[in-house]
Length: 476
Image 1 (cartoon, rainbow, N blue to C red):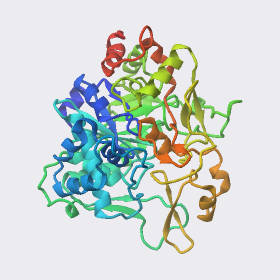
Image 2: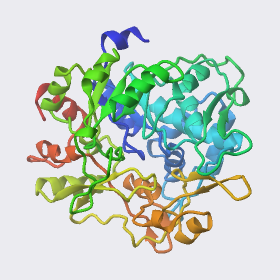
Image 3: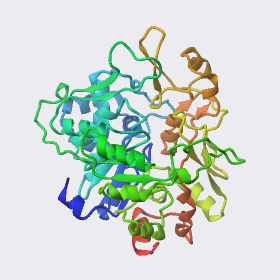
Image 4: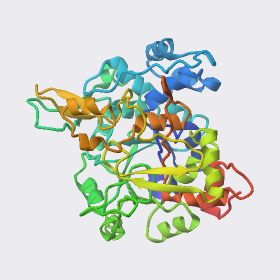
């Protein structure tokens, strides 16, 4: 474990918000302020190629690609996807092939370089620390994502939305350029051969040509029992925990026990969902609290119970450096200023089955049940066993007839949103369709109401304002 980490762990972890909200610009700004800036690796390969198709303003992506240790990869991707500014017009974005259990080396390399680019840019020009956030649930791109991030020198890996028990061994293997494997979760009966994802660094780089350092691994947990399991039974070293409550944005863990819902259909959380911090402390590892702690008082309370600090997402999500579009930020901040915004925990929106928080604000048109279903990004597809014993892929947000034809239950499709297309629209990368552009789908934590401190007399603020507010009780 790094000495600086044990002696001086970061007080603030900037949450890893996808798709592209926790951009390299945001992570870099937070890191330069002395805290842990985190980029989101979720769907970052799609984000990268769309930045290229939009002309790569400032040339940042191309500059970082020039540092990638496999030059042919960068050259191939630029030939395939780069379009000079203002030349794409209204044409739809070119798409990457959707991830599967096994993909081509070229598809792996696109994911590698995308994660490399995001981390490299976040680390450029300073000596602060940078983390990457990945979702355990989005299994198939994770090995290529981790290796690409490590090639750029990522300092921390944070993972939630599942049980990332096997990730420590992956990091250990990649630090030595060894083959890594992850068990692939497949719905249905077990196959004749093991279902796993395999990534061999030596198919991409000559062994040892780039020296790698094993990043610190911080799982995101919602229960002390999960933290205990990971601390004792993970495949390698766990370096700490982010302990997340149900008020955090994005995906939440479902309530424990028999589900109960409010009159508005939101899942209700109770005493069983309160994390036993005494048990977390007893593990002897650093931990940070997340969800509803984005205030100076929240930080002070976290420190008082023995935490190293807090992970904060929502406050950073609407600052100047985040990936949300300026128009989306302005509409949400205006809604906060007029007390006309609400965060609803939707038990049906996400294809993953996890509850998902959705922001509702006047004047912001978002994705709803009226969307013509189309699944062309596929990050949340679930592998399943076909009648022939092979592995297929389905998503309850894809066209209903396709989902049913793949053996899916029609009940699983009710109320589902296409998070892949909605979240990319949030950052100005909406796909063009015959019926019009894809609409955004905005998610935030309950801390959204705390943004009122930044909307007094102004309608924008910076990452530095957030850090000052949390650490110094000063908003300006």
